[in-house]
Image (spheres, rainbow, N blue to C red):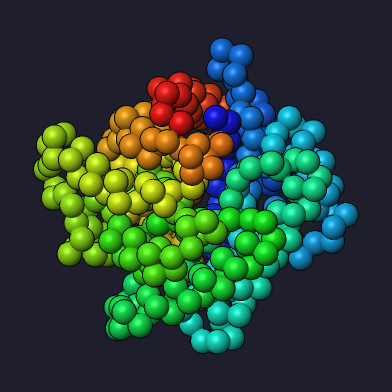
Length: 339
């Protein structure tokens, strides 16, 4: 199983608004990743956000091939891609107006085009295209949950057809900030409503799914209460992963300290923490094993670290990446018999 690092921590939550830190360039993120090494092991590749300033998703074929050359020159493969479905990028809400939903589908088409160019180049041989509902917050969704979930599902079905036509698969990332995907139960209901597991599955992130257990934004679906014991935690964790694992086709290694965190427009989400954060709630290696059972049967060939919205000082510290890589190696080695 290949070990990847995500490039989007250099972008998500960064910007020019007051209080935001500046973005970190793609080449800088690649160099930080390439410098990491633990006992001769390095990262095998990167997962990639199709968003400026790293990438213009409307770039020409030649420009995209040049980006592929740059990534390959650092010794990396490309795995999963993040489609620019969010409002303010190319896309818009999957439960919005007809015009908004069409923008969402246009973003998926663009991502499939880029994926095809990377595939043909040879820098990409595995991975999925990540999407979400692109509807920030859950208040509007709660006005009519059944109808709004049905609307998102209809948009996702069309997106899955587009992906299939391009030889790609989509993975919907469960995260408490996305309407209709904000709890483990609502995420499962949405996946089942789409009902196209060969073309659209689930992307599990350890940091985000921890908050599923606690019922943030969906107290009725909480599986744990504060002050839980280890026994209660793993019983709840097994219940959640047994429901979502069959749909899981992409996996993010991460840590969470139990806080809800956000920056810029990407508000109220799971707080990613350093792999060795003393306040981390997760035994990363053990929790990963629940998601990685029979991973190869679901087409998972790589795992990716997600440190979304780390401060720039943390991202630019070489120790950060060596600690992360060491954790990734432990996850891979501990779960080698399961994949």
